[in-house]
Length: 351
Image (cartoon, rainbow, N blue to C red; front, side, top):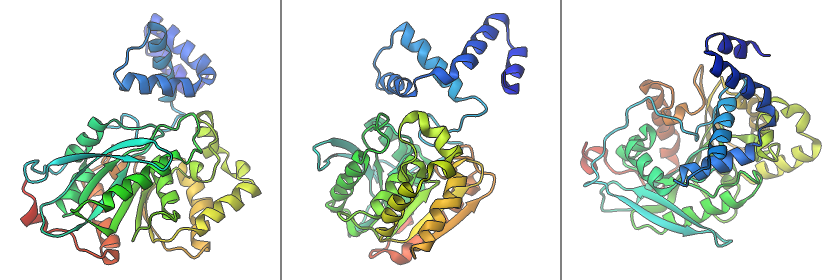
């Protein structure tokens, strides 16, 4: 038994000891696809049977063990306060986009008050699961990063994508984001040539796909710790999440390398990367993906944040100073590339 589990056992009562033992002994037997489906069902407000509830609890406990890694889209809670923006001045609006394959996806946005089109930032959360509209709306009100860009004079778009846990290599999420971007282009509040995507983790992988899309183009792409185990095709199913990050050198075959380099070759806009040094994605990104992007002659600027946890760019488990650094360095990077300047933050938005 692993040391961490032994320490846990010593500190618990007898019934809890038995529970912890069973969780530890059977963690490898968990069907993570099933666990993800149950979690999505629970978050959608659907009832679970007692057996399903117990299974989900066991999976979540096993996933939170010492050897597991955390994402930026799974029940993370921001530790940094948002900027409060008046909903009277900047109301929240919702729309539905239809992807080229017919899938419908809801999203939300807020705009500063201005008498001209403004630049927009489309935010893409992490993980492999779709966010419900109420969650997207809440992000526009309380996410430390999104509210700061709104305050800075940008149209803030909270986007999501279809759940693709059963097929992590599906291009469905990319189709959803293309549809959302096309809808955003049509908004009277938005300059269609000044739309930037800010994608992170799983959403960061989607952002890399969008950077090479022939259907939409961008002046810049901002990415937080991209889950390139998706972009490179190493995470073929949910059970491969941890192995793909751990054994990436073995799994990155010549076939996968050629396919990845082909996709990198289509990237058509400058990339800004926000990256910490604690998450396992650090390895594949800096050993393989980022060097390949540089070797392809693409513009990539990397901002390092030593000691920061995955999700720091959303204000998760970090400091206000770090969030401010993410926002300020992003603005410094994108503003020279935009066709339209942002609205004046003082004149357009009141706290």
